[in-house]
Length: 374
Ligand code: MG
Image 1 (cartoon, rainbow, N blue to C red):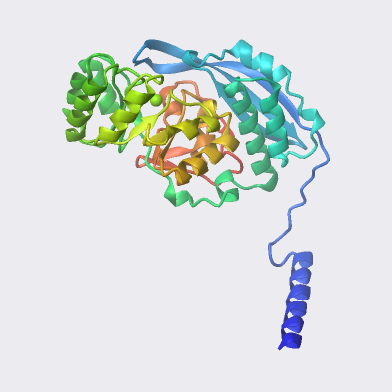
Image 2 (image 1 turned 90 degrees about the vertical axis):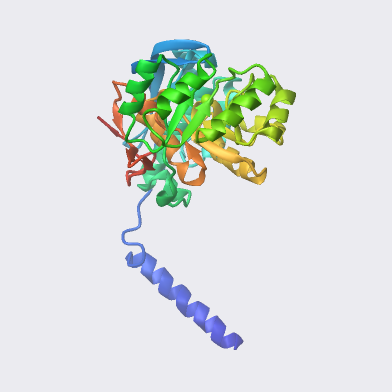
């Protein structure tokens, strides 16, 4: 028996080796060049919003971004930092950070742990700036092996969720127009907390009966009023409540989550992986965004940790081009909910990437984060 097994292994081993040498098992084996140096470049860009965007607290018509590229052996990985004003980063702060990033010291882009730990250690905060390097690096390594990231991670692209489209706080006639415009989406995310919550929901419900997500952006200050509102919302077909109360109200939030008939999701209350440890019993789930997580590497870890804590996972975005949105979409096959509409809210996108087909996040076969320049 022993002899037979050894002979079998020997035969298979030789056969496999021969097949790889001749290229008959995998087709032509890719020759990966790792001799070059990575070169990071960046430029500022201003996203124009299709509609004035109003959430609990402020309004705006543009979003500043910084677009990054990492060039290596003739390939270019694309990245992006998006800076909605409330997150504290600016184009100036991002450029200042990126000037300190010296990728030339690394000659192997696949050493993502080493490279991104180095980038993270350059300075505290600067999360969007760090994400712009992380996204470009992931895009680059996908392009080197000529595969989309979701394939490298082993995710089934059929498992992508539907994405919601966001309706901001506005007067009923505008809300009606926006809701009609969003009819290709199978779920809407409604911003509440502006003092006209029931009017917002009733207006949308006069147009459509699709499921709704609600995002209060910390707008409710009283936990009992918040709970009453959540019971009312449940009857209106709402699926979950994102950041109902101020992020500092941890005890009130735990009480609300314990009594709420709908899941509660943390957004403003956390940024990075280490923040999630405090959320057991405080929120039912988390909304991960690449501009908070410093990019794909940490976002992927966040999903694993949240699952271990039996928490729901949503992946969201800022107003961004198709670059950062398509990067986030690579993780979407393993989340519960997606809110990946940031590229659809702008009128001057410069990339084409993931698409929304029949309301569903739809990944393509392009390598890396799956985008092309328009
Ligand atoms: Mg939110």
